[in-house]
Length: 134
Image (cartoon, rainbow, N blue to C red; front, side, top):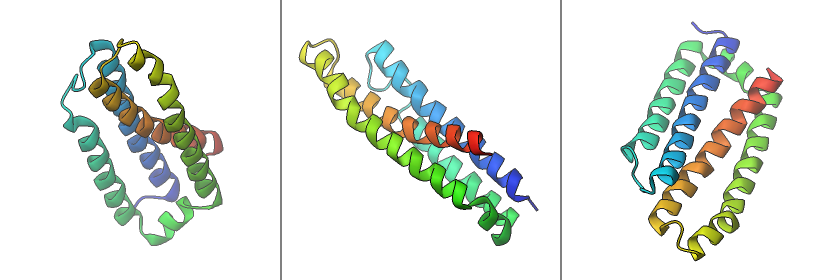
């Protein structure tokens, strides 16, 4: 049986690893100028595996411990991460507009980088907020 702090730590680690995979994918796509610098399934698989691990940990912890791990601070951190993810995703459009208009980057590469950077922004900002609060 996991305590709420163990469950929170595991959730932090899993979401952080998924965020790092997304960030790595985006950086490699931009550096290599390839929309699929590594397997395009990797970001999706890291998220799906993370989902499975978190749900399995929640089952091990039990409903009371999970409820304790999803307190007001968790909800606040999640809302903050959603705001950061939204604004990062929105800001990527003007940031990528200049290199796209100058043909410095191809559309498929920009699409791959922007998608994975948006996911990474949410995941990593949630982990950052959760680490600060806990």
